[in-house]
Amino acid sequence: MRRIALTFAIVAGAMLAVLAHPGGAYAQATRTWVSGVGDDANPCSRTAPCKTFAGAISKTATFGEIDCLDPGGFGAITITKSITLDCTGTFGSVLVSGTNGIVVSLANATDVVTIRGLSINGLTTGLSGIRFIGNGTLNVDHVDIFAFTQAGVDFEPTANAELYVSDTFIHDNITSASTPTAVLVKATAGTVSKATLIRVNAQNNFFGLKADGSGASGGVINMTITDSKSTENASNGIVGTTPAGGAAIVMLCDHDTPSHNLGFGVIADGPLTTIRIGNMTIGGNATGVGTSNGGTLQSYKTNEINGNSNDGTAGGLPAVQLN
Image 1 (spheres, rainbow, N blue to C red):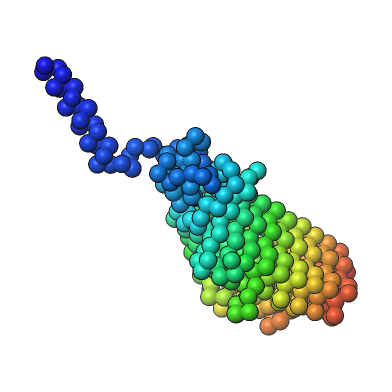
Image 2 (image 1 turned 45 degrees about the horizontal axis):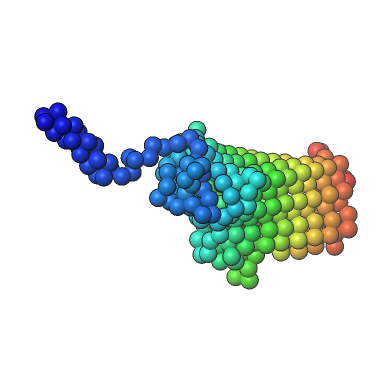
C-alpha cells in the first residue's frame, strides 16, 4: 500500500507541476510550423501546427525557423530574436490594417532575421510592411509588399546594422495623404547602416529606393543597388538625401533602371551625399539625373540616359559625360 501511495503522490505532483506551468509543456523547437487551419494552442509541430507567426515564435528556439505548411494568412508579428520566417512554395501572407506588418527589434549585433517567400498587404492603411529597429542583420528575400502608407521596408537601426533585400517586389505603397517609400534606409548618430539591394522592383510608390541621413550626425549610410528597377513612382526613383549635419551617404548603383518617375530618376541631395552610377538605363523620367543642395553625382560613363523630359547632369570620375 505504501508503494502505491508513493507512486500516486509522484504522479499527482507531476500533474500539478504541468498545470502550474502550462507553457513548459512544449519545449522550444528549432523548426515550427504554421497552417491556415492550425491552432496556436498546438505545439507548432508539422502534425499539430500553429495558426499565426505570433503564436509560433515563443515555441521556436533562437536561430530556429517558422515554416508555412500550407497557404494562409498568419498575422502581424514582432520579432526580438534571431529567426527565419519561410513560406517558400506556399502562399503565406501577412495582412494588416493601421499597423506594421512585421516589426524586427534586435538587441544584439550578432542577431539575424530572415523573411522569405511572403506576401505582406497593408490594405492601404497599414504603416510599414517590414520595420527594423535595433541592430543586427535583416534579410528580405522573395517578398511581395504592397498597400502601406509609410514604407515597404523601413530600415531604421539604432546601432550598426545591415540590410539585404533580394528578388523582392515592393509596389503600390502610395496614398493621397502620405509619401511612402519602397525601401527607406536611415542611420543613427555615430553608427553605420549598410544596405545591399539586388533585383528589387520598386513600382508605383511615392519614393522608390531612398537613403535618408537626416537626424544622424556622424553616421554613415553605405548603400549598394544592383540589377534593380525603380519605376512609375510619384517622386524620385533613387534618392540619397541628407542635411549638412546628417549622416554621410555613399551609394553605388549598377545595372539599375530608374524610369518613368515623376521626379528624378536618380538624385543626390545634400553636401554629404555621393552617388556613383554605372551601366544604368535611365529614361522616361521628368528629370533623368541631378543634384541639389551640394550633393555629388558621379558617372562611370557607361550609362544610357536618354528620353527623359530633361536628361540632367552629373559629375564624373573626374568630370565625364553621363553616357
